[in-house]
Amino acid sequence: MAVVMVVDDESHIRELVRLFLEDEGMEIIEQDNGAAGWAYFESHPVDLIIIDIMMPGMDGWELCRKVREAGDKPVLMITAKGEPADKIKGFRLGTDDYLVKPFDPMEMVLRVKALLKRYGISTSQLIKLGAITLDKKSYQVLYSDSGQWADLPLKEFELLCKLASYPGQIFTRDMLIREIWGYEYDGDERTVDTHIKRLRERFHSYSEDFRIVTLRGMGYRLEVLRD
Image (cartoon, rainbow, N blue to C red; front, side):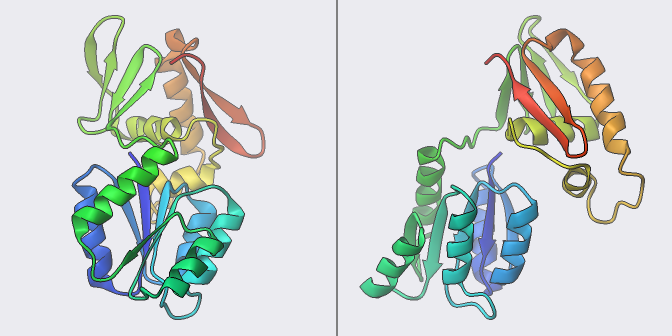
């Protein structure tokens, strides 16, 4: 599932974007200012960022510049500023595409999907790990060698999906706690280790397809060994 962060101080714009992109199976993160958007981006995996220009504090220009300097993530700017000079400035700062308010929501959807495709980011509800497939819609696992579907404990499934959605990316225990258990969780972060251990035991016979690697002092990452 592609994760899209929309940063706009207008709540109705965030809601509009969320409703239309959620219908396409995407996960939407809402932030109402540039500083909050940047703070989230620094510590969470995001596939695409939708940025408004006119925001209090850190504006969209600055957020776009920081996002682009931090890495190669698609950026779509949505703004009331439609002057050619503003568009040129946006592209020079690193935005990939540009929409002017008011905009057609379906055009926004198509532009987002085009950017994800350009960057090779899947919007599918299925994640394939060699001989197993994770269905994020039904929360089930398909074992293609036997043709059988199976259920996993919810947190194990969510943890595996999170790692498998970003193969090769390192996740700290703290990041996984926030992403899977939520900010309100007040238990021991070692619960992540317990769930990782269970996943390794459960999928031991598929170790030639994928593996979850421990990086001492850092966290975990999933490596796909066979498509």
